[in-house]
Image (cartoon, rainbow, N blue to C red):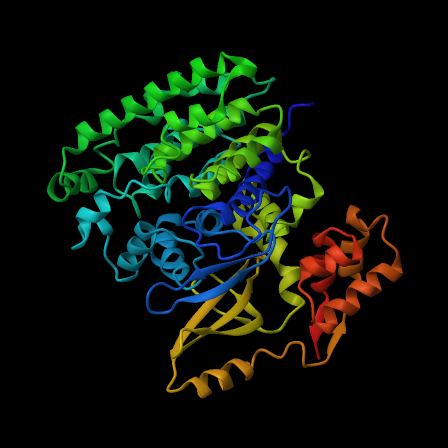
Length: 513
């Protein structure tokens, strides 16, 4: 296999991260999956999750290939970087708005986002002690865009600074931050690798690079934050940082020695030793150590590597599979990804985001990508993260006295997410009436629709290799199903035996009259 180009590596990393997330999310111990179809599957599955907490509990249908907060955060960071002043954009716009559409977000991440929404840094808030005890993987899971943005000219020291700046917005414990810096360093190793990766080589490279990723934050850059660690954490921060780094290196050495067993190595035993199934399985260091092992073990079989992480029941499956996907994608590129996995939510958006992050002028590259799409619709509205448009609406019950309005929206870059609004009602009869009576914006399927093509749209379809072997009759059948509105895109694709990407492309040219 030829060594992938930088573009192929970065695109593969972004797409494979989302794939791992979507594949592993139903099996995550915190996902609250209420479906019976929990058997391991090579394909994305449709499932139902219980969400909303104590006061707004409701059931949410997750379509095949839809991802969780891991990929949401990756795209959030990517948008921030593309926007320019990424620290301000991320802290003041992206994180606060993410609370409106988050799917599966952890307590620490949501708590920090709420504090930032109020205009305070978490390390200076009245919940600073909780912040400095937040060692989860909510930081490590989102730092991939920083590596891609620096792909054409990697500066490890500057990369580590950006990753730490990003991490400390939400997580203050060394386990979270070191997990993120270690992941970024490993990604940079694979990005720079221009020859075949030796068995166990990645682990050894990360061990050798501990002076970079395990270094304590620069006091000249993080002086205020370091002072806050002394005032507001309930432990010796520097000592804990050092002990955590030492523990990670010890476990990396254990992984290295285990890999020397070759075919005799036992995945479960190794993952147990890095605490993958322990109470601390959601920690940032646990996530990257698990992913580094799986990447090294399955470097020649990335599909199996991602599945191994996704189906490790009892572990934080979505994050481990996502990080493993990021590493394997950075190693192997994108050509190995099977067609059924390209049905992952927002596949085209992920491709475009990678292209923008790699561009010399990120804003201009993004503008070129989004301009044509913007012209296809006239229902764009402003939001804290840019233009979005409503796609559909749904109303579901929340207990006996509540309803949840769920609005599916789409960004200019093609990312889809679900905004929620909660409302109390007076009686069960009112609940029934509200659920039967969809909001005024819902009837996309009750309004007449038209299929519109211009020269640019025709060129887009002609150049798309997915359309090379599809008949006009098949296109019309798919078009009819989309306009009828009785099936989701996954169902339409399955019924017509085509990639969901084909359905997604066709639906972009269906508009309301």
